Length: 203
Image (cartoon, rainbow, N blue to C red):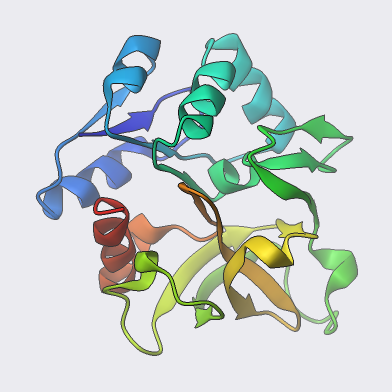
């Protein structure tokens, strides 16, 4: 059973619908006991890092998620949920993350080699796999995924599994132990995204 963490900042319906389409049992919950009982967790998220981290704490789930991950339960962070996995973010100040993956979340705009590119980075981009991993078991060659973000993960090369080119290598997929993160939205990425969700369910 996959538990989708509901802390007020995520596109929960489309994610749950994608999992159900794959025949994967799932539920959306803000209940700590239900999260502890689940086989694996997904941490979605949209919006600003500081606000999301605060809401996760206020819901009483910050330490629950971190403890589950540290105990080895598979955890997938999506978009802002991926960013929350890192040590800190510099989005509108400095904010502490879950600290499950070393690195920081910083603004995309100053690092772009091509300053004519738009930020937020919105749209389809090819995912370039750097390291083989079970999460790519079903992923198609030349697979494209859908991004919507203005900040990205840095200083995390050792944990980076895949990137996408946006005049710089944008961190696309990260992993530390049983903790995975995807900057893009697999639930909005068609067959390629479904392939990643299917693989996560088997991790």
